[in-house]
Image 1: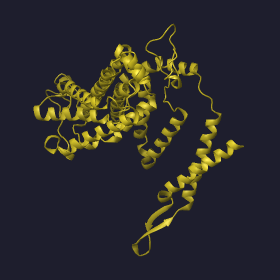
Image 2: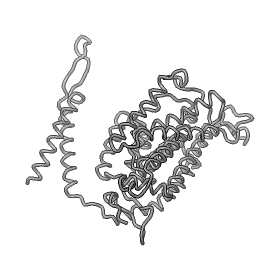
Image 3: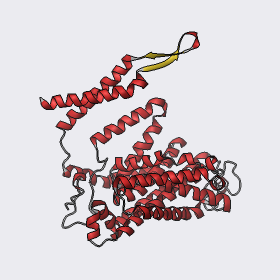
Length: 424
């Protein structure tokens, strides 16, 4: 009985705060009054529905939390092992998608966008998922990569393939530059400093008009070529369509961009998996679990943190370079905090440290809002509610198990709730 009363009290308090929040937005309506004047009228029915649904939703969530049972580790382990079949299936589909007969160019372009965020998620997963360093300014390295290519291409005439490694090196250098001041910071303090770093980069590229173009950005950024063949719609000699005797079509350029970002994303995944099995990757995981114990084992914490920031930033720079060549135009508006929040949400939603989870979360975070364009203003409401439900049902992400890099006797997964204890 006491639990029921506590749940009702909790739900009533949530409904009260919902009343305060929804009141100005749903309880009032601005319309035309007499003599063409604006008139403010109340809509109590709509407000009552919103508050009532909030009360019922909170009460239902509390009841579900009381009666739910934790998923056994063996079940979670079986789900994790299914990734052996899911990952190859996703890879085959990703490679074949632009070649599917009758597929619209818009879906291939959506695939390019999703793969870009998959690459960003895998890059941030090194910092957050493996090393355990909360980074809210990851968009800064994304911007460094994009503006590096934009400035080098427009001022020195360099192409995409020449600028790609340079963008990664410059972004990694800024990652080291960020890592030095935050070596002694952890948790919320580290998040605040990295957030400030991302805003500093955005303000610099906004106000340094003579170099970056300021709010106007950089235009006429060249697109990538295939062994010197461009994807021009005019056709003729020196173009992809003219060399192979094809009719110029936008799908050709979109498919080429798709395979570029797919190759870059697979490179990111391969390097991450290889590094995780190396001493450096094991040092990252030790740092994530317990920094004090990590120091006691003789691990150089400074170098471990700097390598995590540098390698994660390098892949962010690669993604930024691709973003610039894909759009042909960059501006500070493309590198706001919401980009960092989106990438971090992909990592957390997919499961911190999980490569397959990042792919699934990117498809949900990026693909669903794009597919719900027809719902217009309601699509973000549906999307937000879906994220809330997912985080309630799976608070540790889609894939919440971790497979130790080194084990004794028999390999087995660790439940996320036991990650800090490390049995196995």
